[in-house]
Image 1 (tube, each protein chain N blue to C red):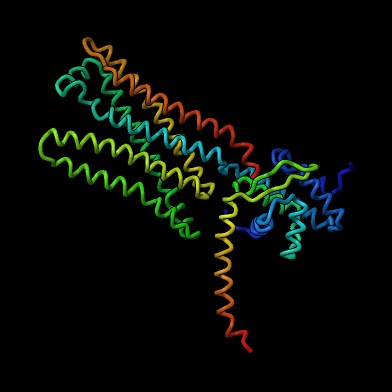
Image 2 (cartoon, chains in turn yellow, cyan):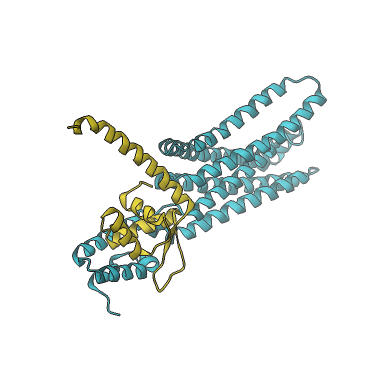
Length: 100
Length: 290
């Protein structure tokens, strides 16, 4: 599965504990400044659940929380490490151009 | 509770998808509306999500854990079947002796015919396995390299290394000294080969469980599993036919090994067929999450 942005955002949001749809949307908005639409959010949730990277918990007041699985955490960690290396390389190469 | 107009767009989603996520999504739309989210972009987003869900359904095939497990079950069954059939088939063409076999074959053509059918089924099964193995190996290696999962790459080396070591050892043993020593080593090497086959199969199963394969590769895997199961069915039928034809040949009995082998082939074939049918039944609801 490709690591699309909504998938990364959802996994990152779930990294610190289970959340239901609305809590996820609000959390992602607060840490990334991105307002994920409901269709995009549930598209990502369905793909992640299918892959076994998140799992649904029993519903609370019709809201079903989701939690990240160990496989999901592992995939997210690998992706984030790669992203960190890419970001570091990019910033290092940009330094001479951005220096005053 | 009245449904908001963006929530009405949930009707655009596939029924199976709606059955699983519809309530939750509707609640989210209501909560977002209550928090002041603009309904127009939300409506477009829902329509885009519905289109993606339909495309996923039409694309129709992604691999669930159940289907993944079914492929692994077919693999184990096929390995057990192939090992048993290879051991049995090795002697069939010359059974009970090199002089008696042609005589029985001429009197009862079903005996050599069944043997050739078993051989053909084995070749077809091996060809299907080789094609699927190549597709899975290429993608597993690509994914392992991209994600720096060196353990997967190390696991991928296990089957060829085991096969190479075993064949090399067998080659060395064939030039051994006295008959008793050679026989002892041959039995030991045979048991070691069985352990090697089990270890290699377990390794392949681990890789299949741990890697995210594309839908195309899963399709190849499922087609190969179907072909292998069909080959197993034909092979089991041929072995039964061989035994019955042999029994019909006056003065000959196929022996106890035939019954044992037939039982093993039938059980492994049944196990593969049940796993495959079970995964087919489970395929439709899973497609909604593609």
